[in-house]
Image 1 (spheres, rainbow over the protein chains, first blue to last red):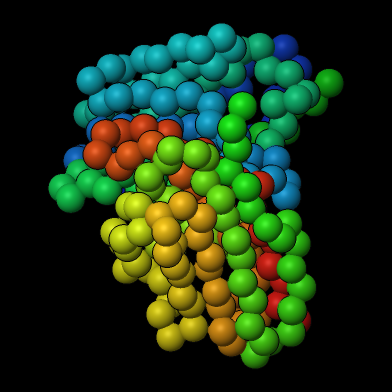
Image 2: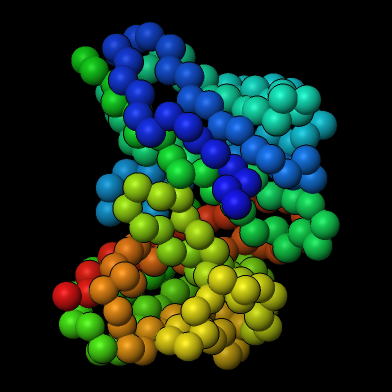
Length: 114
Length: 115
């Protein structure tokens, strides 16, 4: 049972335009959501997070939106840069017996073309 | 900035051999995680430690995998015997504590290839 889903395996955008990456979850008890970025042969690096008490969090070019009723979150990157090309993972934590572990989606590969 | 250290970065082994991975979390981080990432999929938790105690090993294939964190600092993950399906990236992560929602810090991972 995939509790966190990223239904788009890949996304290609032009440099300077907006990139929108989407993520859906099924467990309504999740209360903390994160986005990680991963380059090949490296570990994931933290990008941005959001608590379930908020619906938006912004950090520079990165903004995460949370829609709890739809169990959906998205990451907006504006403007997109070639260095943003990587795999992006959505992750969630929370629920009964929460141990702090993160449950990850399958990832979306973003390609930003110059 | 402090980092999670992992070694080796790459490991090639033949099936039925034993392999071991090492992780040193960020100093002061009580919680340590081992994740496995298969190409094209997201990381999946294998085992979680709080200090030296196992908190969650429900997804660890215990017939062949073992993990320890004897002094509550660094940790070793072992596979014996390795199988072809074990080829993946093994990621170690740490966090200050597990009682409040917070981000995990990941190491660079060990890329395992089983031939």
